[in-house]
Image 1 (spheres, rainbow, N blue to C red):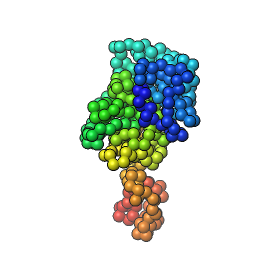
Image 2 (image 1 turned 135 degrees about the horizontal axis):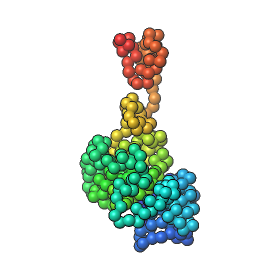
Image 3 (image 1 turned 90 degrees about the vertical axis):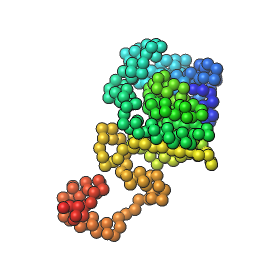
Image 4 (image 1 turned 180 degrees about the vertical axis):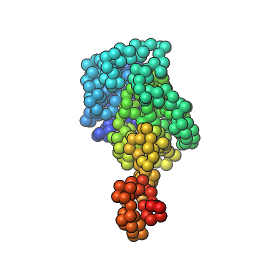
Length: 317
């Protein structure tokens, strides 16, 4: 973590500025902080392998204590959720100059998610998100400004922003191991921040001109807060800025990684403030629903309503 990154970081709980606690264990090389503790008015957070961990999950609390005890190696194991055998292999690969992304993924994510990581650059959702991110970010960052990739995993799309962001683009994700991979292999040179997308974002208002979230919005429970936070991050007055959220899933279409998506009208109401209040059915809609309820099997009727399918006489036929 470069010390200048502290200028845009804020505590997600009290909103205060964060500073490196020089009186506690830390290691740095010039302006680059490798391990240490940052603090605000209310909390202490660990910096592990150059990644500030700005949440209070149990692993983060344990890692904070391990860094203060001068054991950042243990803090990295804790944040990556490695057992003893995995930790030994991980440490060996981390020290090697010839280890590859595939090698590390085999330790950190040996299952289906690891396969997804390995083939992410050829994934259809990436093939769509990459040109969109390049086009929009290229436009709004033309005169300068910083980009952030929220819930960006191991940094495949962050890599797309490296040459567009005037300062190091920021990669934010809850899973430490993923953003560690990004800093090491996928998007070296980015600034990585470990934080929870369901909580307020640990960044200052207007710190960015471009913010994106791809392939992850369906896993966010606090969607209304999340959208408001992304808009806050790019609120830089009259400067051009943009937020891109792509591949959000549809509540009416099942997928293997379904998450908690909304139906189309749910996304409309979430984004359009003029339609955000729920409305009841019109008089004609109520009549059709009542008529359908007397003719259809009750379970089928409920399924039609949930799926947004016609449940009137014509729809029943």
